[in-house]
Structure formats: C-alpha cells, structure tokens
Length: 197
Length: 197
DNA sequence: GGAATGACAGATATTGAAATCTGTCAGCTG
DNA sequence: CAGCTGACAGATTTCAATATCTGTCATTCC
Image 1 (cartoon, each protein chain N blue to C red):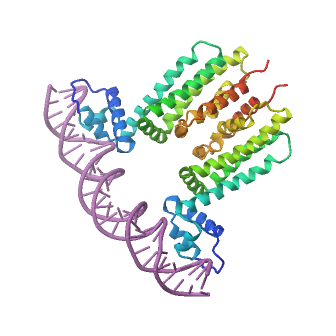
Image 2: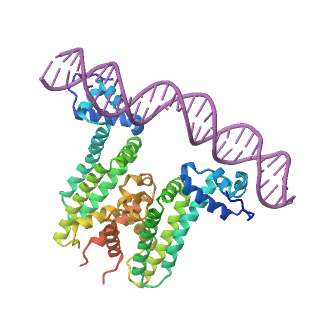
Image 3: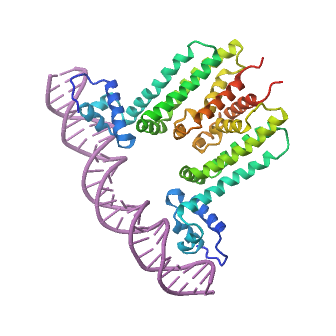
C-alpha cells in the first residue's frame, strides 16, 4: 500500500500488524495482509518473525506492556502506600476501561489474542502483581498494612479486583453501578489490609 | 428412544433436554433430538415450551437453582455469621468446582447456555447475593461485622470472589495454587468485614 | 553477501448447494 | 375434546469444492 524505502524493522511490522488487526479483526488478519500494508512480500515478514503465532504474540506483548509501563510510575510515585495502592488499582481499572471503550474493535481483538496466548498473559499478570507486591511491601514495612506475605496479599488483591480489569468482564464496565461496585470492593480490600490502630 | 405411556410433562422434557445436551453439546442439541429421546414428535415439545430458547432457559434455570438450594441451607444454619459466611463461600466454590470437574462436558455446555441467557444469570446472581446479604446483615446486627449497607457488602464479597465461582475461570480451578488463593482472598475479605475490638 | 522475492506444497478458510432444523397448524386419535 | 402428530415454509447448518493462507527456499537484486 505504502512502499517506503525505509528499512523493514520488527517495530514497523508490529505497527502494521496492529493496524491490520484493527481493520480485519483477529480471525481474518493474515500475514499476507501485513506484508501488503508494508509494501513488501510476506516472505520478508517471516524474516523477522518465525511464525504467525510469534507475530501475534509480539504484538500482544507490546500492547500489554504499554499498560504495565503506565502503572509502574505509580509504584515508585509519591504518597503513602495506601494512597498509591488506591491510585494503582484505579489506574488499572481506568486504563482497561478506556481501552475497551475507546476502540472496542481493537479491544475485542486483543481479548481473543490474549485468550490464545496463555504464556504472554501469565507474564503480564506476574509483572502487575510484582508491582502490587512492591506497594504492599512498602506498606507492610511502614506499619500501615498488615501483610505477613506481601506477594500473597498482592495476588489476593489482584484476583479480588478481577472484575475490574479482566477483559472477560468488559461488557459490564459500561453499566452505571460499576463505579460504586469498584469503590465497595476497593474499600473492603483496603480495610482488610490496613492495620487497626 | 423409550416411548413410555407416561404423560409428557415439562419436567420429563427438561430431563431429556439435559441428557441430550450432555450427549450432543449446546451447538448440536436440537428440539428434534429431545423429542426423539422422549419418543414423541417435536410438535409435542412445543406444546410445553414456546420456543427452543425458552426450553434452554428453563433447563438452565433448573441447573442454577440446584446450586442455590444447596447454599440456602447454610444461610439459616447454625454457627456465628463469620463461620456461616466462610462456609457459604467455600460451599459455593466447591459446588462449582465439582460441577466443572465431575462432568466437564455438561459444565461447558451450561457455560455456553448461561452466556446466551443474561436474564437467568442475573436472577441467579441476585438470588445468591440475597443469601449473602442475609448472612452479612446478621453479622452486622450482632456487631461481628462492620457493614453499614449489608446488600452492598454482599455484592462486593460476591464480586471479589468471582474468580472462585465464575465459570469463565473454570480452567484455573484445577491448578494447585487455587486453594491457597481462595484462602488468601477469603481471609482478606473477612478481615475487611470484621469489626476490630 | 545480506536482504528481499515469489513459486510452491500442505494446511486452513470460504462459499454455495443440499440437508436439517425451527416453529406452525390443520387434522388425527383415544 | 385435549393432546398428539406430521407436513410444511422459512431459517439455519452441513459438507465438499474451491480459493486463500502459512511457511520454506532456490533465486534475484542491490
């Protein structure tokens, strides 16, 4: 479509792949489509990604990492651990909700992709619970939280808030009660974590 | 298959429907199959259920109600509210996990059915959170729980434990860490609900 | 000579014609 | 006559042929 003289890099292929996925959806997006969008033969794409699955995995990892990076800023940010924990969980919910609301096609596409790519999602979840563990460990250290095992507490908090970040629940993120539900769960969990003076 | 002289009742049709669903799965189970299993014409089935969708809805409701009935016994059972709350949530998890593990085919079938029948599921969830509300209200009354709005707390607890009863997570119910995860979430939530002396 | 191409074999997806199903209803049956 | 039947029209699903795609690699191009 747009045959440039620019060198063909993995990054350019990933950009084109995301565009093709947005246009055609996960079922109909082909490697041939990606190559056509870049003005190259599909053989050239296979020089950078061994298989179609590897290409899908890379583009999905890139998408998940964009969210993780945003949240990482909050972990090392200012405020006490309770404030940062609230901010982090709220930011995660907001990020997912906006992704789902702003571009439903692409969100649905990535939901399909994450379903077929267990490994990538597992790493993503490990990344996020790692961030949560840092915040909770800080709170445990300062005496604000009662958490003998911060990593276990982080997993519990992440799992208990699944309804507000797991793509499987995306269709409920537009209902009016979701804000109240989120606040209720968040308060319950924070009360459960907080030490009682 | 087994043409009996017994009268054709809605209940007999539902039994046959569940059997056909177990055998053929949700995609291939037809009204003609159900009629054949009962040794009647498919027109007779339509005398009891207006549409195929109504039949599927009725058989699904029946399935969900069986779980709700089991749990209802715990609500009015013995023990203090905290004990009953733990028992109720554990029983819900166990019931779902056994359904999923004992007859995966049928469980997968009902998961598909519940996905297409929003209304029935909504009622089922309302039923279960109603039961939870009773237990939590009892705890609030006795001073064991701090819950200004027991219904809201019940919704929060139900949603926070979604990972352990939502069929969407069924494939994770066989992983080894699930028991620990459940215990961690349960303890966190109960600590969050309990008043601090 | 390192990157890109395009023809190719086997695997996967699309398509449209044929078969089956859903839902109705006039008539049969006990 | 209350309940059941089975033929029927329109909607949906199946199946097999046809077309497209994936992944490879000998060859071309700069």
